[in-house]
Image (cartoon, rainbow over all chains, first blue to last red; front, side):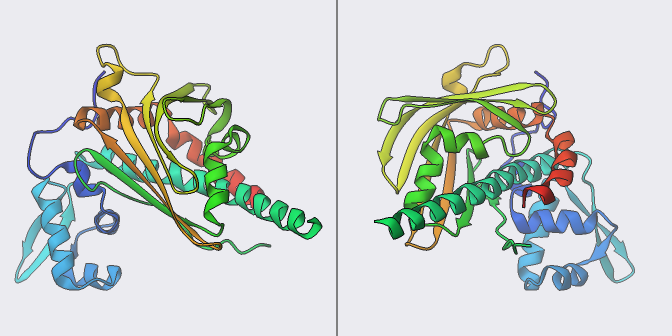
Length: 121
Length: 167
């Protein structure tokens, strides 16, 4: 079977790069266009060193590139290679999220039943 | 209309061979444990709104096996099975898990993961964590292939339409 996310053996695994929730937020933010780091800091509500660290990881796997614009450095998405992974991680998380939502319904019923049984005891 | 708290599952990959999923529930541990271990209850959530569960077999003892199969909305059958390695009621279940649609040439031993489900909390709330430990990047990628094959993106559209009616 062809693996759509085949990748070189590097110390920074592309899956790890996109499997950090904050890094996925950065990728999503950059999907709408290139942004300076301050924009990302504001949007994510994280300290700049942390955002910079996430950006560095994303750059190492080629998901994010820098463009110099005068004195500004603009970050932009180079997500073509990583998009399948990004999509998959989000989707896998969503699958579990949906399972858990269904479990909430089951658990509410079990709680109600226990309370009923308790009141009849 | 009932207010649903925002309780999204969070997923991280602590290492190249691990997937970690965490979620909180407004229910005591023993009930979450029941939802994870009783076939009639598993049937109701394991399909993730993407189809229906047609097999939910659970032989809940060390060395016992389990098997879940669902028919996805796109018609595809998706099955998983495994063997229980450790069972601590209301606290911890360790089991192997292997996808039944492995590509040719991939052995079950290579592709199996060891999943540790842990429950922590009190009489009101439970923190559920599921650590999926693959034996190699290969087996982690097998998990990824299994998700890809489901055609889950299509099912998401359906999900959006039905989510409101389920709440």
